[in-house]
Image 1 (spheres, protein in one colour):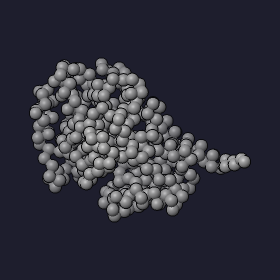
Image 2 (cartoon, rainbow, N blue to C red):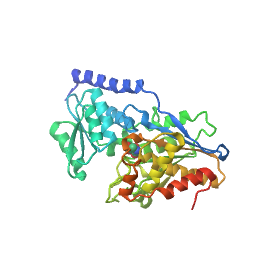
Image 3 (spheres, rainbow, N blue to C red):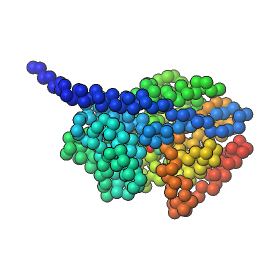
Image 4 (cartoon, rainbow, N blue to C red):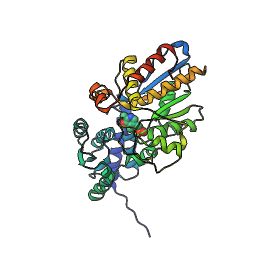
Length: 362
Ligand SMILES: *Cc1c(COP(=O)(O)O)cnc(C)c1O
C-alpha cells in the first residue's frame, strides 16, 4: 500500500505564504527596551520592552505571526479557506493582518459589544467580524464556522504557548536578554509579565529555565481573572464571574496556554492600581500605554521597592503591551473611572511617594 497525497499547486502556495510571513518579520526591526527613570543611587534599573511599535500595534503581532507559521507548517491553513479566531481584541487585529499577507480570508468571532474601533481595524485589514450575543459561545461558534467552511479555527488560548519557539529564534525573551547585554545588570533579577492567553509568560519563563538564568518570573493578574487563584491553589478548574476591565488580560478560566509550573510568583493587582501605574508611566516617560502595561508596571514597582528595602541591586523588566490611544475613553478618562467606581488616588500617592522617597507606603 502506498498513498501519495503530494500536491504541487498547494506546495507552491504554501512556500509563498510562509515566505510572506517570514519576509514581514525580516522587514521589521526589534522593539525598543525603554528605561523607566529611577534614582541612580538605588542601584536598581527598571525597563519596559515596548511592544506597541509592531506593525499592528501590540505584542499580539508576535503571537499572530507564530500562530500563522504554526498553522501553515502543520498544513492546517489552506488556500482559499478562512482562518477563524475567537477574539474580542488585539489578536484578531494582528491575525487579520497576516491573513491578508498570506491571502486567506479571516473571520473574527467576537461579542456584539466589541468596540467599533476594534471592528474597524479588523475590517481595515480585510477581515470580517462575526458578532455573537453571548460571549461564552465564541469558542463553539468559531469551531462550528471552521467545520462549515472547511476553514481553520486558530484557537489562541490553546496554541499560544506551543506555537512560539521558546528556546530562542528571536522570541521576546531572547530579545530582552540581547538588549540588556551592555547594561550594568544584564541578567534581570525579575521579569514581570501579565497573562491573557498566558503565552508570553510561558515563553519568557521557559526561556529563562532553558538558558539557566537566575531571573525570577512574576505574573501580575488583574482583579477579574482566575489565573491568580488557579495558580495559588493548583486548581485548573477555577472560574470567575465578571469579565476583566483590563483589556487583553485576565480570564474567566485557566487557559490551556497558561503554564503555571514555569512561573515563580503571582501578584493580584487592583484595577485602580493598574490605571494609576499607567498614568504614572505617562508622567515619567511621556508615553501612554494600555491598562495591562499598568498592571505589569505596578507589579514591577512593588518588586523594585522590595529589592530596595532589602538592600539588593539589579534590574527588573516588564512590558509595554499596547498603546494608550486605543483607550483614551477608558484608562485616561476620569468619567470612566467614576462610572466604574475606581479611586486611583491612593495608588497614585503610593507611586509618587515611592519614587520621591524610596519607601513604599504600607
Ligand atoms: C494579550 C495581551 C496581553 C497578555 O499576553 P498573553 O501572551 O496573551 O498572555 C497583555 N496585554 C495586552 C494588551 C494583550 O493584548
